Image 1 (cartoon, rainbow, N blue to C red):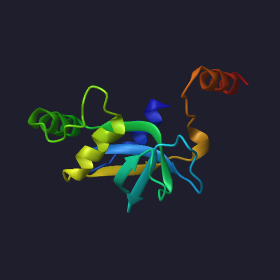
Image 2: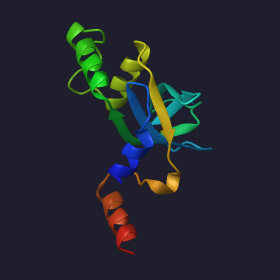
Image 3: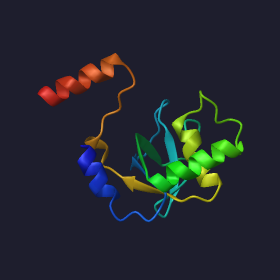
Length: 128
């Protein structure tokens, strides 16, 4: 699975690649993505106009990790605390001019795990 994501990220010219799926309807707990032309414009849970969701996987290339660390060290965004979400970090990179690519995965190729029941359902699906 991880190898497949790495293959899909090959050729990326940006700082990171965010994986997700295009959708017609948002669920209440989806991490929503606004993307344009394959670039992430904004990500978060409260974006009602989004037409894509995150699969919860983002490959940060070393230069993205370095850029994010520099931004945090400079105190660019006080909201990035120990309790900050990963999508806040992605938004910080985007807001400061770092391009993040959105790579679509068919929705059937990933499974969201939020709680133990989801994990058990995934195990049942894999063992079937």
